[in-house]
Length: 206
Image 1 (cartoon, rainbow, N blue to C red):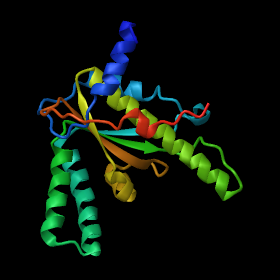
Image 2 (cartoon, one colour):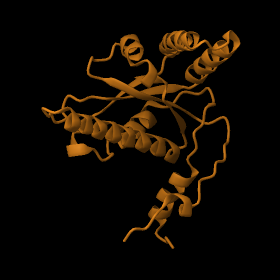
Image 3 (cartoon, one colour):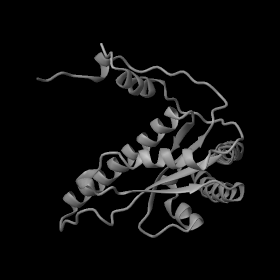
């Protein structure tokens, strides 16, 4: 049984964090935002290359521009799939509302600029996977830090489906590869979730 106060706080943060999609309108203070971004950069990374990059969007105009551009791509993809028009418009509207309704957006990107280069495709793909894993861990750090300081967030995978759109809209460097988008703000909802029992997901093989 864990008795150390700091350890209990860390474990509680991990268990209590939830993906929140509705936020109060007040902005995230710049100092608080800097704290959670700094926490993200302390994630472990392959070779300690720290391949994560973060693009922060806070202005209503900036959020709307990104949401509209990504919505256009979503609409085109769904139309190509032959989805019903009402389904398409519902999905596009939901995406727009989620993005513009958050006080801050953090686009989580990776760069391969400092990762190792290999002459064969197998090892190079492994190197890329290592960068993806490192960047995802930074995103988890950010979400946990946000929870710890009273904020909430939600990881959206949408940038994976339109990385060029995100990069062009935000004017990001060509080596920044969008992996996800985290909405951030003070929560305006509560959510409860369960997890599978350990017996279903753990196998001791010692």
